[in-house]
Structures are given as structure tokens and as C-alpha cells.
Length: 318
View 1 (cartoon, rainbow, N blue to C red):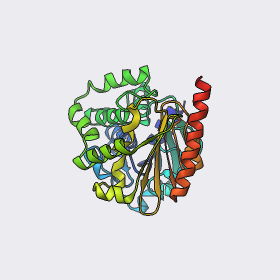
View 2 (cartoon, rainbow, N blue to C red):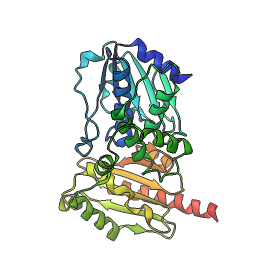
View 3 (cartoon, rainbow, N blue to C red):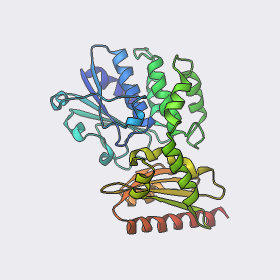
View 4 (tube, rainbow, N blue to C red):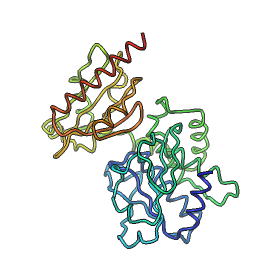
């Protein structure tokens, strides 16, 4: 069983460094830091680190460790919630002695000496709780701090339990996690409250999105628009769900202009979109994915392809 193999490797190494994907979300941080704290609590003599760039908006949730290159010597590297090597935050993961991949995205880029990929899981955080629960000898320990991280990751990647990936197991695990002592209200406020600048930009999105007869919607957030609303590109993640409640929408895409790239965030209520994201330097889930383009002309091609996917989905549905 792969979970036993992972536990055996954790026991074998004295130094363990845990990575996750760039531009972290709640699931990336929840799974990464939740696993870190499980290992630290269960094996107090081990040196366990979580690394990667930080998002100031998520400082309340989890913080990263500063790790020197030499610490990677003879270290076990575990990479959470990252489908392909190009999205791993901090390329020093290559310096470790062995690599373990733990992920719930489609395994289009198999990497690592051990891989545990479960696309049926709502989140990688759910998998980390699964890892804790499987261990029959109860060597692994758990507490309220870990429950907060795992629960936050599950909440983030299920859209507060609204996404189709939410299963009966997800709800069972959530019910178990909230029995541990942590402040759920404070956690929700941290994950979902936004500043007035984000709220005003959300208003701009609702006034300016397009919607085609095939149910495809798009919105462009140029640097000019972001500067006008005093919003950094990294903060636009809280806007992506804004169009999800609109009637007749099938899939929608946000283009966020940064200094050297145009970030693409795409969501769907039915049409499969991760294959399209893969064509544009990205990937993700069938209904939630990300990509990047270099020019607005390339963004138009993405819109054309997404329009076609929505049109074909409508034809199939009828």
C-alpha cells in the first residue's frame, strides 16, 4: 500500500522538506503544512520544513521556513498538490535524495520515487487526513492546529463544499475535523473576507464580463484596470468564483495581466477544460484549471477554443 510506503520513508529520514505548487492556495498550504505538523508532532526528533514563496493574503493560515541548500543533502522531499514539475515552488526540490508526490490532480506528469495520486479526492488536504487515519498502530499524532490546516485546505478546494468533487467521505472527514479545537469563524473570515478594493474590482467584473450564446464567458483584467483598483495580480484568486452563479454560464475565464505574462484562470460547470489549459502551458482539474499566455492575441485563441468546447458540450447535452 502506497501510504505505508510513504510512512516507511518518513520514518527512514531524519530531514524532510515539503514543497507545493507556486502561487499557493488553501489546499496547497493546508496539505503541505498539515503534513509537516503531523510529522513534527509524531516524530519530534525529525527536522521537518515547509518551503516555497508566500502569499501575504494567506499569512494568517500558514508560513514557510527558510532552508539552506545544504539541508537538502540526504533529505526526503515530499511535494503536495502539484501535478507537474514546472509548477513546483522552489526548484531545490531536485537536491533531495528521494522525492514523494502526493496529489489529487490527473497524473499527466508522473514524477518522484513514490507517487500517491488520487483523483477521486476532493483535495490533497483530504488525502493527508486519509494518510493520518490509515495508520493502524496510531504512531501518527493529530491536534487542533493540524485540523485547522486540513479543514481549511478542504474548504478551499471544494468551494465551501459546493464543487462536484465533494464526496460523502469529504463531509465525514469535515465532521471529524471540526471536533478538534480551532476557530472556524476566524478561519472562514481569513479565507473569504476581502478588502474594499477587491470588492470594487468584483463589481467591475460583474459589469464587464461577456457571455456568449454557448455559455462561454470571459473577462480581461489588464494592468491598467488592476492599478486603478489598487489590486495586485496575486490577489485576483478571490474573484474567480464571481461568475459561477450566473444563469446559463457553462465555463468562464479570467485573464490577469502581469509584468511578463498573462495569467489564465478558467472554471467550468460541465465542459472539460484541463486539456485546453494544458495546451496553454497549464493544467488542473476537469472543471478548474490554470494556464498562461504571452499576448492578448494568444488570449483570443484561448477564448476561441473555450467557445468551441462549450458549443460541443451544449450539442452533446441536447
